[in-house]
Amino acid sequence: MEYCKYHPLKPATWYCAACDTHTCDDCSDESVYSDERRCFHCGAPLESLGAAYTVEPFWHHLKEIFRYPLNPPVMTLILVVSALGALLSFIPIIGVVAMLLAAGIFTKYSFRCLEETAEGNMVPPDIQDAYQGGLILIVKMILLLVAVVLGGAFLATFVGTGITSLLGMLVLFSVPAFLISYALTDSILSAVHPGNILRIISAVGMPYGILIGLIFLMGTSVDVLSYFVITDAEWITATLQSVISNYYMVVMFHMMGYVVFQYQEPLGFYARARTADIPQVRTQAEKLKAHVSVAVKEGQYDKVISLYREYLNRQADDVGISDSWFEFLYRSGNRELLADFAGSYLKLKLKKGCQDQLSLIYRQIQQLLPAYIPQEGEVCYQLALNCFNAGDYTGAVRLINGLQKKSRDIALLIRSFLLMAKALDELQKGEQAAKCRQLVTQLQRKADSVS
Ligand SMILES: [Zn+2]
Ligand SMILES: [Zn+2]
Image (cartoon, rainbow, N blue to C red; front, side):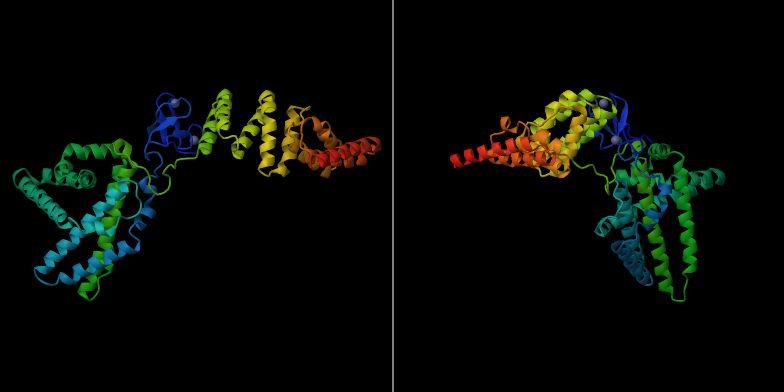
């Protein structure tokens, strides 16, 4: 099994032939318009690995496989068909037809389970699928069985019993491959073709033996269980035996479907687990984050920078991405770009109501740019207020000092210089505080004359 190059614990679902790397769904670029995926690293189209790499092997999945038919519609189908089949079987002629019908319905339904499972659907298909074409299917199977038995009898008479029993073993051994092939191709002729059977067996490899063993075990347990349910009432016995064998039949076909699902790659058959991880189309922001994460792990910092800038040129208001861009600049110590971005970032955070984070962001900016003072009036006031409340009076004064050159908003200036005066009081600088209050008076006069 291959794992994502960037997430060593995650099974890979894509392969880039150009980079020779395996990636997961997160680390590849999906298109909004088509199924195609591209490599984040080089932009080449990716090959899907199907679910081949992510499927648990069937022998680790037996508990779920055994529980597969345990849902109300399937259990109802099993009970009703078994009971009716058993009741009618005591009536001559009608009984034979009823038994054929019951067997037909079950064989048909079991094949549907195989097909659906092979496609990655781990929930039993609709039981209505069972009613159509079941009789034809069972007649085909019976004819095939008759042909095999007649062929065997012919061989035994003219060639010898040794070779016949050897061939018989081979035929038994091929049965699961035949059933899988038939479910996938819907053609008896191509399913009995030894070439196709061999292809399936070799694609599955050694685990085909495990499959045979499990089917054999299940067959034996049907016999054993059938023995335990023998009662005095004949039809109850028949019903119970039929319930057991039908239940096991669904389980066996589901297990064969699971084998196809697991070995889909060597079988040349692609499907994805439909239950949980169908990759969703992500938002632009989610995709950017994933792309950035790949570029960071590849050490391509220039690419990271251009990805963020391109995105923020279009969506300057995206706080989440702005946060990650700021964090990247801070961690990578990029003073030049941080000086560019700091002002608009602080303004955006204030606009989005994140006053409480402003001081921390400002401190982080100052670690890289010690002389930095924001240019935006509102940002300066809010930061100064945070400083004042935290007891940092010098910081508050520093932020407001010279604000009249940055902002023409008189109300804001009045608020700010009043705050500055209070800070100066705290610092025991009465003279400067008085000057500050003078400025406030002038500003108030100006405001009155305007209004
Ligand atoms: Zn990944
Ligand atoms: Zn690539």
